[in-house]
Image (cartoon, rainbow, N blue to C red; front, side):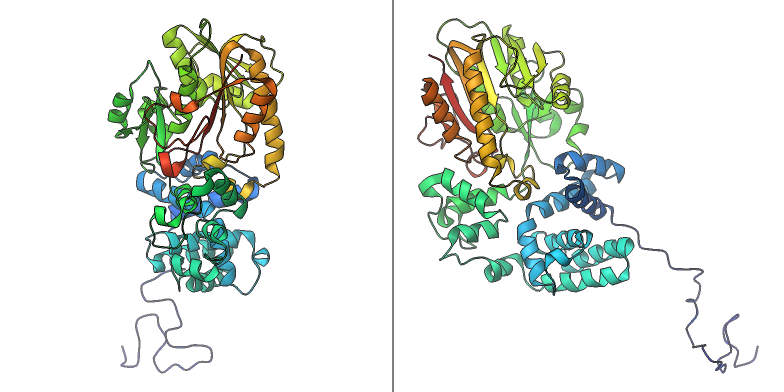
Length: 499
């Protein structure tokens, strides 16, 4: 081999043929093109969830389990995908404001799929402990694999601008003035539409804006609205119902590693992120169902309210789907020799009810609760868990705050009045009706409840008397539960006795 000859198979060092540059060939020892980077499956799953919500109007809590199974994610990876997907959906308003500030175009001009990726990356930068370089690089690689290098470069540039400030600094730059518009500031900081923040403030009353919503202050100093929105924006704990007669809360806590709930004798709290809840043995075997402790409390209050006259044990669940409260009422009825009739207008949701109440003394009817073919004066107790905006469960339904509109309220309030009127027709004189919504909006709660009670002359009971041990229930006679006060969804409860 001459002294000018390079490595075997390479051009001699002195070769200066046109178009041949030293080192321009494949790297030494490598054959063929470089392998693409392994996909980041938790982030890919989170991005797929964002796409499903945007393109199919999917419900995140229903779409995510299938996505996790498709990507074969469990344990920590499933927990990361859930946190990133749910968190990004909850924080969309704040994220969009920051992203728009960091781009040279309106968000409406950004390709929707790229905007989803920007939201996912920005959420990691602003609301997680993921190192900034990892948040940016993983998002860029996701986009590079799906949309190419040019789009990846755009994502990289925008996210690096987002990462120049933390969340508190962006809020200080972009939020309305806390002195001039404390409600707008709180709504922006906790990523809620303004109209929803206003609804919370109205329901909280004089305590809502008791202080300035400044970063770093305690909830008491900031005013209760700030505390309520912050709790609504946090990842919730999963609540389970231990089915009465099948398993105790103590036993359920032991087999799931959870803790017993503070108020309902059947509640168990477990931390989300340990895998799919349906994979828990107690849930898959039908010993427990997922149900917020607040939902348990309002159903239990109906069973505790005193009747005038005898008790035949007949209970009606007028808006039963998907069946959580019917399970609780049916389990208690089975222990006491009673029966439950459950009405659901949707055939699909009625099937869900039938599935979860299998083996219980519950009969399911597919009908409109306003016109259900059931006997008048036929029930001792009637539950009206009315369709509503769901503003009380936004922490569990992360996309709902951006999907609902203020104009939804009036139509729902009309439906709620009609259902409550029907319930008072079906309950016997001396029987009790529980009016329940998973919303604190005054038009859906006290507005409907007091209006129907006054028009039909029903006796209003003090609901606080039937929630023993639950603190901070207000002045009555109705009850509004809150995430920041009780750790439950924001459930409303009013009790009426037919005269």
